[in-house]
Image (cartoon, rainbow, N blue to C red; front, side, top):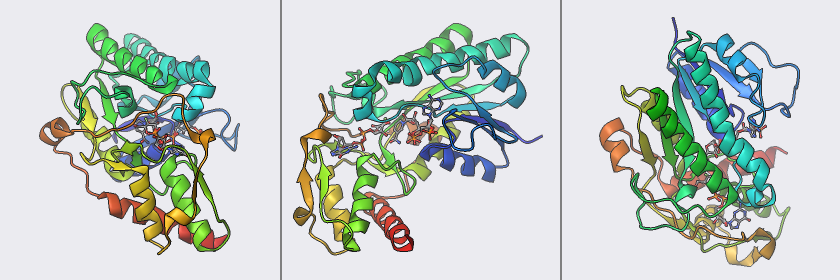
Length: 319
Ligand code: NAP
Ligand code: G4F
């Protein structure tokens, strides 16, 4: 019998990489789509509609999918948007985790198989960082409604592990990017603009705080860490990061450098992209994951940027 996995947020960046990884490992992959997804009403075999703001059909989905592993990727995942939609973000990104955990508890209580649970926690929880680099022991200081919601989900995951013995783990993942990254995140916004500017179809790129620093890795590497967490006999929480930090400014230099253009001639600072509170610097220490999971990142920063620029250039030339 192949192992079965259920992925919420299967249509997102990580959901897609994780589906490929698990499929390559012989898993039968089931996925949950939010009801606004295109093709509504046509979810096929192994695809289910559910909204984490509702959750009323989660138990029924578990009964149909009978997963050995559940990866909770679904979230309103945009930090800036969470300032405009704080209650919605708290509901989906925070309480949504509780809805999934409670469905698993009910499922197991009714005689279902044990479900190993992965929660997509975030380095945003460190927010106004108490120390650098950040580890599993660094205190949280969330700086956005999104980060507050993630802290809630993180602690509910631990509560269900400690109260009910669920095999529930948190991956505290630092920023990870790819050609599949959503277009509203800064890396993809930049690489798409680089392609348009190179082809002479755009002149200016408007950005917010370009001095912010992030620990950027490749999403394809990071989904492997998620899988490794659920293969451990004991559930636990792990930081997943490269250990390097780069500013948005550095990202601009490398991305525009890939096509031989000086970014300074094209970038404008626009206050509409500033946040009410900023996370100035993130840099993670993934020593625990290296030691206990045998995980390490493969794609370095410059290669990641080049991969994204080349992808967006190809896309732009084809359109
Ligand atoms: P993403 O591309 O934004 O994907 C989020 C997924 O959640 C999408 O499939 C989305 O569906 C779905 N979704 C949104 N609202 C939903 C709702 N109300 N009910 C059910 N599904 C809903 O995010 P990602 O980059 O793949 O990240 C995956 C997870 O890791 C997220 O929880 C994110 O917060 C977390 N995380 C990401 C990073 C990172 O750097 N990428 C770092 C740390 C943690 P649609 O496609 O229809 O919107
Ligand atoms: O790409 P971003 O929007 O990612 P952010 O806020 O770090 O959040 C991402 O990573 C988190 C992990 O740490 C995830 F949990 C979360 O779901 C998401 O995937 O912004 C990165 C930085 C910020 O400091 C932002 O202020 O870039 C700065 N920035 C500057 N100009 C901009 C822009 N960000 C966006 N999205 N758009 C801009 O125009």
